[in-house]
Length: 193
Image 1: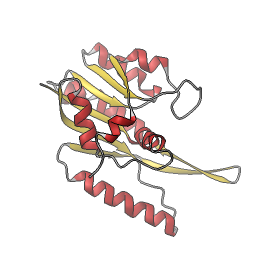
Image 2: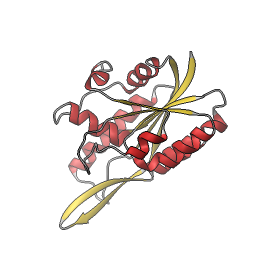
Image 3: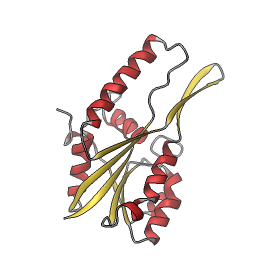
Image 4: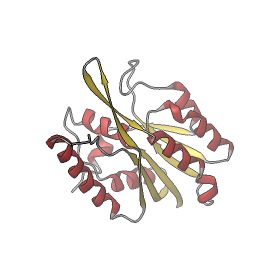
């Protein structure tokens, strides 16, 4: 079996777990999910890259902010026990728009792009990678990897509606070697014990 690297866009996976859980997050073993998806393509998952941002913390964190951060630290500590996972953290930005707070991840896509760029340099034996996202910002790097003879398997989810959490980018689909739609069964097969 050939080795592969799995790149996980945590924001996308989080939204998908909530969607498949009908408003409740499915409890998923990300290591098992990565291994299962790799095996579907006769690949051995040698390393997992997980891209996220810690929850927002104000200067004087509220009780809710503190609770979220404690849960995040516990999750990160559990994930960090696995030697084949690399957790890359951006930051969470809070903006006040029309009197309401909006939260968004910053620098996460840049970190993912940097690591994808380094695949041909740091992982000479890897000729196929798996990417879990729905973000069309990755089209240029996918095309670059293709030029360097690295095949990309995109695991994504989309619906037919425009401007939703799961709207599809035709450009992203065209930029990869193969794409597969994630299913609820993929997550159920990797339920966290």
